[in-house]
Structure formats: C-alpha cells, structure tokens
View (cartoon, one colour):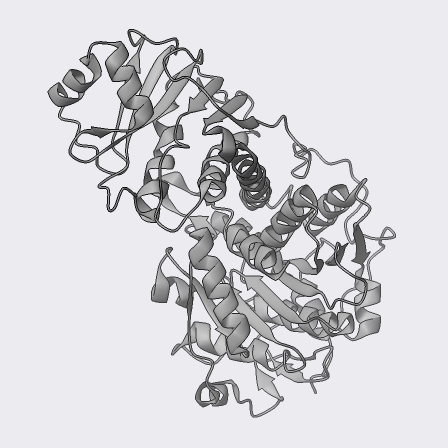
Length: 534
C-alpha cells in the first residue's frame, strides 16, 4: 500500500543542515549577491561641442534630421557630419548607428550617431527609443571607452518624460556590469569598461533625469543578480547557495530579514509534496523566506513565490540527455524573486513584500519519488505523481500554502514551469494565469510599461477535470493537451485564499542556442508591478 506522505528516505548520517558529507568543496566560488563596482550615472547640462568624453552619443531621425546636439556638432565642422552621413547611406532608422573615431571640431574622442526613426509631431515612438538605446552598448563594445556621454535628453518621446528616458538608458547600460564568463580561468578581454555615464539634458530636467537613472540602475542590478544565479552551474548554485545569497542580500538591511527553513521544519509543517521532489537528492532542500518591511505595519504585503529547482534531471521520469545542461536554469523563478528584492533594497520602496522560495534539486536515486507514488501536500490534498518531471508545481503548492500565514493582499508565483508555455508563446511573452482580474490587469500593465510583457491564458474550470485521479485528490499532470493551463490549474487549487497570479517564465527566463544564458526576466515586470503598488 502506498502511504499518503513523503516517500521514506534511507537513514544516512547528516550534518546539522545537510545531507551531504563535510568534504571540502572543489567548485569555484561565486558570490552572486555581492555588489560589484557600479557604473556612475549622472545627469547634467553639457555643451556637445566642448564636452570632453571618451564617446559622445547623439541622435538623428529619418530624413537625415539631426537632433540639436548633432546639429551643433555639424555646424562646428562646416557640415561635414551631414556630408558623411549622406555618403554612408545613413537613413536615421531606429537602431541604425555610425561610430566616428577622432571626430573633427569637438572635444569628444568618439562620436556615435544613433538613429531614432521617424518623428511624429516632433516625437519618437516608445518602441523606437528603446530600440535605439539598446544599440548603444553594442555600438561601443569594440571601443575602450570608460566615460560615455549621452546627449539624448533633448529627445521627446511620445507620452513619456525625461524620467522614463533616463531609466531606459541606465537599465540597459547597467546590465553591462554583469559578465557570464566569471568562472573562466581567463575571462575574455573586453574593450568597453564603462565607469561613468553622463546624460546630457536641460537644467530643469536634471532632477527628474537623476531619479530615472537611479531607478534604471537599480532594476539593472536586480536583473544582473537574476542572470548571474541563472547562469551558475548546479554544482555551485545549490539550494544552500541560494539561501546564502538571500542572507547576503539582507546583510546590513534594516528593512529586510531572511529565515531559512530546513527539511526537518518542512516535514513538521506537512510539506510532503515539496519533500517528495527533494527525496532523490543529496542536497538539502530549503524554504527561503524574505520579509521586506518598507510600508506601514498594518499594510498587507505582496508575496512573490519562486520555484527554485537548482537542477532538474526530471527525476525517475528522466529527461533526454541533449540540452540537459540547461536545466540549471530551472531556478530562474527563485532568481527573479532575489533579483526583485535586490532592486527593492536599492530603492528602499515604501511597500511590504514577502518572498518565499522553494528550492531543491530533482534527482533520480534509490530514494527518489516514483511515478504512481501518492504524497500529501501541506494543504492536506493528496497528489498522485504521474510524472516526476512535473516537479515545479509540487514544490510551489506547498510554498503557496505556507504563504497564507502572511495574509498577503496579492500573491505572484514565478516559475519555469512548462515546456508547453514555450510552444505557446515562444520567448517573447511570459504566460500569465490568475484567479483575480484586477491582479492580472495590473501585471499585464506592468509588463507593457517595463517592456517585459506577459500574455494572459485561460484558467477555466473546464480544464480542471484533466487533473482527476482514481487514487488521490489530484494528479500532478493533465496530459499533453493544454499543458501550461493544467499546470496553472493545479496551482490554483492551493491559491483559493488570496488573489493569485502565476507567471510561467519557461520561455522568457532563458535563451538557448549560441547566445544561451539567463535573461533576468521577469525582474523588470515584477519591479514595475511593485512600483505601481507602492
């Protein structure tokens, strides 16, 4: 007879908080939450002709219309700039660029002309502005510039102010602080080493531009942390490592506290579903709880719940070998929670936020959960595990139940949950499911505002019957059809006591192929949502 609880494990001699022995680690160290030297961002009035800098960035539009700064430079050099642009076929399309070395008539060592597309009533579109700004780092990458001045404060963007424009610049260039090759014995030599970025703008715009730069850089720091954690290999980024990073994040922060629950405590709480996933691993599972108290004591918190499978083999339902290395990114939901908290503490936002991260490995072993096993969740529902590779929902359901104790006003869980969501939406949009229309609309709005978009999928009762089980209250999979929907339906059964949304980031948190690596999404969406709530 199958017991309705977590599978029994072999008796092994443990240290106080780990299944593993006390052998000294031979893996490289990487402290993801440590604060690297930051790029210094500032806003001030500049003279584009006389301003000394390694690289000066100016704007041009379709029809070879030059921005005021570009026009000043053109005039200072007897209109040689216009002649050169015509000769090179520069059309001013959004994202088009030309880099000039040793430009004549100005103090800057290099001049980057960026295309911003067509003007409509004197303004450029939001999409074209973003496209152009994203080109800056690529265009300057071959240069040894450490000091860059961006004369773009004079641009008018449709329905956006200087604060927003400055934020886009800092958010994009701030991500240059992260490098994915930190574990190489000889990291590649990169010419571009940004230390100082100046945004040239009008005097009355400096205060708002400065606020935008601060916000953008704070978001970039959160994105960078999420990317770093997502890129780290599973032999470094273990559940214990994630717990250490959370504690490091809270160090010296009066508003942020961290508590880490061990497997013994989870067992006492009845988290049989979560522990069934951890059963096959030698690494101890952790439930990481972060509490940021920036708002009034009486204010109910927003809760962010992250899936943290630090490596996913599929368990007994073993995944195919090709590209299995990428399963180190199955903790990107957890990474996005930590990244969002990194931004929270940078900005000291006046809001209460709880983070709950359920983290473990999913490994095959003699002690691992088997297909057909039945376990009992913290909520008391019994679950028939038909596929051990559908493990994310098994850890999240107990994390969602645990989150009830904080009496949150809204709960958002973030998980690389289903390959079906990748098939449905590709890598452009995060899948969104919710039991609350207002919460769903708020997240969709935040996604549009942050250019980190989500798309809402149905959560109809029609799909729930796919999770019926002959032997337990619920099965952990619902068949091939609507896989991302039935996964969300599973989670919804544990989210009935609060407004809840589920973000399936399987397609957006990671890039495969030659440029493979973590993207840091959906940190911008989550931060924008918290900003709007605050």
